[in-house]
Image (cartoon, rainbow, N blue to C red; front, side, top):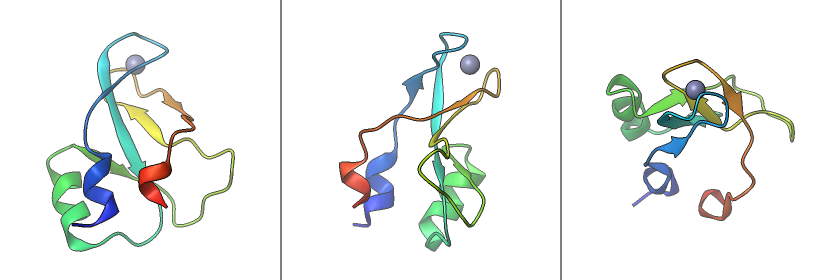
Length: 74
Ligand SMILES: [Zn+2]
């Protein structure tokens, strides 16, 4: 089980309120993340991220935001 698979699940979008927020995965993800990407469950971000990079993306309105609860990622 990779940490990436623990990132599944939708968040409520702070911009439009839809429950359509999916994770943005940075870096070079393992194959299973590409499968999630093809199914629209995650978004692949740029290879480089900094502290201000958003980690959630709304599939409805395209809004991106930062949520600070990333213990599963580390
Ligand atoms: Zn939205």
